[in-house]
Image (tube, rainbow, N blue to C red):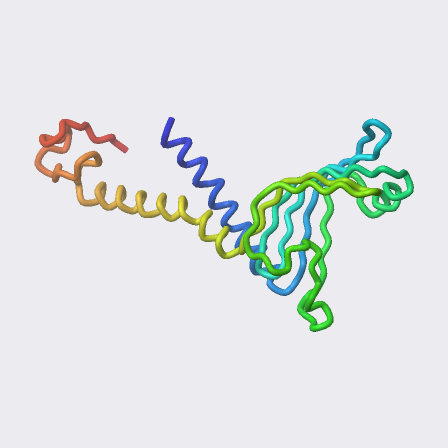
Length: 188
């Protein structure tokens, strides 16, 4: 059970590693936003709930936001631009004319983890944010697959040399049971 869970977490970590590496490379000179938005109406306010994944010049932003619009006019303007469903858009930010482009409002920050709550006349926002350099997330998600690779390599080496998988004792003379620890090697 533990091995199956470890393998599942390793597969998920490898998938996240490949995804963050792709977003890191793809968004080096661009602003890439992938998000899921849904609209609802609560206590005479239009509510937009969104989950965001953004790559912006080597940074990755993950966030969950809930925007409440107090006026129908402001909500209708945003609703036409942000419909229900999954969306993606991209901007080229490599030119000098966009040097100060900062859609996340975190231009000088490399790391950010926390919650946000802003109350305005037209919109009030609540959300949870994570912002980190893409290289850090890529290497962090590469730890489990790297550990799995070296563990698998060691296991295959022990099997090839005829060593006990539990303690590493030489099993060529007694292949059915380890005389050192008593472990019974599995047959293929």
